[in-house]
Length: 350
Image (cartoon, rainbow, N blue to C red):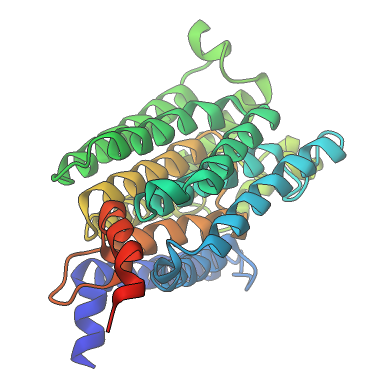
């Protein structure tokens, strides 16, 4: 039992506790305000899927240098491209929403980056192809926000591949600043009577209406919110299923669970970064970049309702954390250069 607790560590225990409090608070608010609490609610499903993803990522790291995993990543990214090309607007497959497809592709790019770090130079072609396919999938989904957050993730991968860093905490600090600033900007935009000209050129009028409706609902019950699912009844745009959510995680959470819910969400975001930072510096930086990308992207789209997106984000976090330095050296924790040496020496072993 102690060994399992040591493996999870205090960031993991804090994360599990926060997720439990998050679910409990959301359920309590919904029940208290007669909104109920559905077992299919994102407030319940997303935390469960995230935990499963983290656990899966810790198992997946064992196959970091396995060519079968590399092919699988390339195939999934290729399927994302086919989904865009073979379906019409607005329900782009495989997730039925273009921006969610783009968010999934960004997380897959993060997984490709983690695999590249554990693979010898001569065996990276499939992974490079998978990464390129992932970026192409983002572009084909025509997600401006997806492209905006994909660029830093790709840049982070390129930087850590070019020169392996030894420090990781600066990435956590930067991630917190970016995520916090982004949330503050979105809240500020939603509070104003109209979007300023620069925001009007980035966000459409539908989002402007949705965000105004969300912040208005939030202001009615600032501390506790109006209950999970209440936003649907607070906007006239909910007659269209595609606009029955606020298209902003921070505004939806604020409107439905109040400042307490937003604070819990922020702590979960921070804990995810701290969990990733348990790993080696290169992997931690890639994972923090991918996690921050999803969080920031979710401020302007409804993404956390899509289980595959959250699951893949969990895989990235779990994989990065599993590379942490320990007393015993495992093959998956070696640098790609060390793996290359190990591959050459394997035929002469014992």
